[in-house]
Length: 467
Image (cartoon, rainbow, N blue to C red; front, side):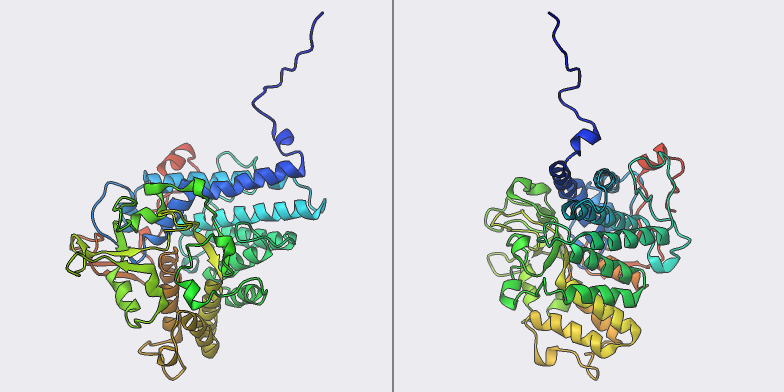
């Protein structure tokens, strides 16, 4: 007697089969989040956002293309930009698959999942456009941004949308995501307030200052988050992020995700006891240290560890003093384990301060700056008043300096400068120029944005390469 045969491949399913139930869609959403955890996203996103800034100093030459990111000598074949571009669009594709398999209004749970994936899609688009598209204020409606990927069956050979079009898409997507997400989740996952926080940042970058304030207010006044106390702040990044009341969104890494010497923290730190946990080749710059040292009681000294020899003298690599940075170390007491914090409440106060400073609301701006300074353990004469800007020419200067102090090594500094049409100046020891001391990058310089990956341009002749 003949037997029935099931000829369906046993190791594969169609999208319809794989995403057919709410449980399937939840599992797939976990997979979309996991795309952020991948080193090609997390580590390379950090390199592309933080290494071009002036808070860090590379202590020597290296064949790793992070050297080119750091010193503004990017090239189209850079593996870091190539891998990040590819991984970001993988996250976007995964999110699109899930979005397309959910009918809005079917249930609160499914609406929530669709909203979470809209957030992930928006976040990846924003990271892409800020790396590969010129600053918004430099001609957003004319300058090319990146490819908007809003569905899985898009044009196989797409063109780059304008910077303004990418921002408009992200904003609309986040507004829809916030509307859909009605379930509060911890900082490992997107929720309404997470979308609001990213909207506040994006509106600031786009110069829509009233909107930046509006959405910062929504986050601050939501009651969901609180600035941690000064004592706890000194070890802010060591507990798991979901236990931290200030963290809005973090890319959660578990013990299984520990990448040892391939982790973000490995370049900043090497356990002084074992001397075996990292490379310890990128340090806090002397420019940043000098700024921090204006107030020895500032709690943000806790994120810096000066390395001394047996005689108590400062250790150096070459001519670069070893100021280790520990913001990406010692989560759960594991040397290089870290869950990078993408959004936190302190940034919301400083976004609001910057927007108010630009709108001429100087007292409101200083009030928010002082909230952050007080949390850092500063008081009395260390706080700002309208008649005492402590040598700064404007309230905006005060805000930008506080942004630098508070969010150092979290991927903001170069963007903060170029967004405000200010140059980046490296007049400190480090391998960023031939004489190792002087490098100035103007906001209009070509390499404040990266080349599109050569591989992508070769495959798709419709992609316009950055000059």
